[in-house]
Length: 267
Image (cartoon, rainbow, N blue to C red; front, side):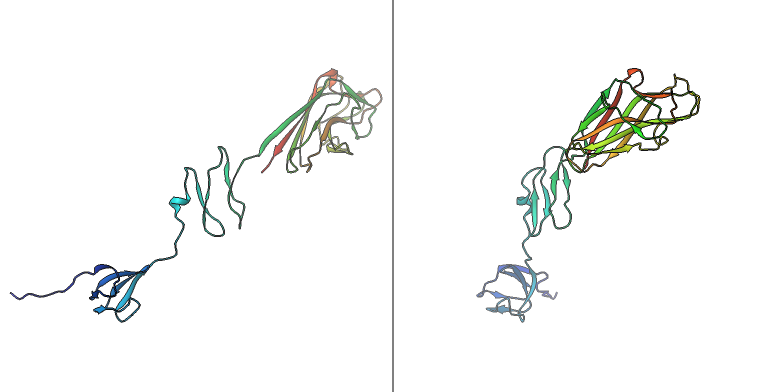
């Protein structure tokens, strides 16, 4: 039976290129960071000679060794302006915060929430009588008041007032409500709830009103004072339509009126 010589049926790796070695077709060698295959028998012809060698592969640009960059459990891999970098684990409860395009991520602490709660109260009755206009009325002593100093200019202040009010007038319709005012660093006051509209806060009664008409009123406001200076809040009455002999009481019968201010911090 005749024998058929098929020659090589697969390439042969010959290791690093040697100028003195004889190579045949399909020999594979390495040279520098590249790999070549012989396309013709050769000896002494460098791999750069395209008549005898064809390049199979070349080493690319070295990347970051992630195995050595990340060293500790909890590490985070990110890219900065030049390459891959390690961000070590933050502390318990922190979150990963992006700082936008062109900036690196960081661990941050969630500071949003209630930073402080301040309360004030008074158990002294304050009475308004003969009030034909709807201007607000505030006690000059024994006030329902408090002072709060925000920790940040970005903070919100939630203010709430609660007290008992009694209205009495035998001949006139009466409007009654609560008013809260604000003063920063002892400066001028601003009515943040109630100004001249007695309908905006509270109740409107049609005459005649019995003296035992007694209600519990509450009001609240969310403020953005944009300051870290001390803020004073106090509570007054809006009263309208009170004839001679009529009156409206704040903290009726010396019941306790309260005011609460909460500093709400944001990121």
